[in-house]
Length: 328
Ligand code: ADP
Ligand code: MG
Image (cartoon, rainbow, N blue to C red; front, side, top):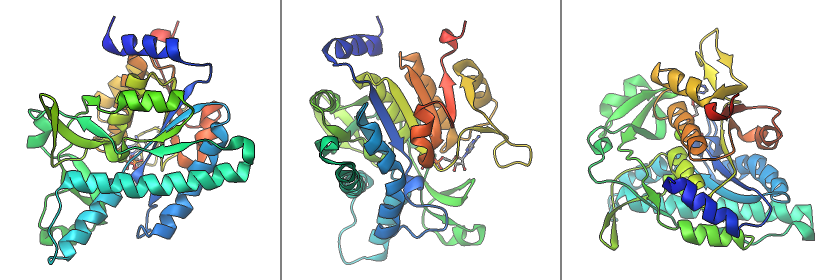
């Protein structure tokens, strides 16, 4: 039996009836296009996904993960603007974003649960999470993860760091190694089984390299969709929802003949991925994450808008990725 299945079986034995939904919230969905990323904007934007998650928590056990691309990039800029205090390495900035976004999600969720009444109350926890990466990962030699603000082409020659062109414009790029395992997976399982809603793996987790029994942080940002898929596998989640700022997955995205997909099987998804329909650093890792989750025995995977989380769970909108093995 492969490892994911072994963990899944042992988790299922211990599990009570409610299914686990793992919802991955995009960092870009918290700061919308054209916004500066003020605290007010992020709190306002969070109400949309979090009010839905509060309602879903009646029927499902919930794990929330989140991105941090814009937020960690802003922290980098803040420390580059202030030279009189020591600069902190990227892994500590990732930890900071787990704290700041975890706090915003947790307090918003608390208010939304309160609004649903006394019966809806649940214990909440935001967990600082480490994710193990391989120090020999070739990603360290080829940075691919866009973070921070969007720049115009004319601005990039003045920047002191490398940038890449994304669909939204030019952005700073850092190494993005693959997640190997989530260090706190046992704690997360235990919290979820005890009724907690857990916010964890923020920004893809703090990237660490394991040396025997100790960990050491590294300068990188792990893709949160890939970490979320790894976490979903390791805790035995049933449903995996990747919530972002588009309604679903499209072919020829952004072109006049773009076509949104309601369902796509893992075999087709892999083919489109290798044909370049889903770019690395945005839709590519979401598709890869959904495929990985289903291949490790996950039941349902969706890519949808933060506005449509509940509708996607009901199968009414978004893109559902379906395991090719389950198609007769
Ligand atoms: P998040 O912060 O949610 O991870 P990303 O920017 O990483 O957001 O990924 C979502 C973006 O992917 C969308 O805003 C869209 O611009 C882009 N995208 C690229 N290719 C596609 C595609 N084929 N279908 C839908 N969206 C796509
Ligand atoms: Mg992303």
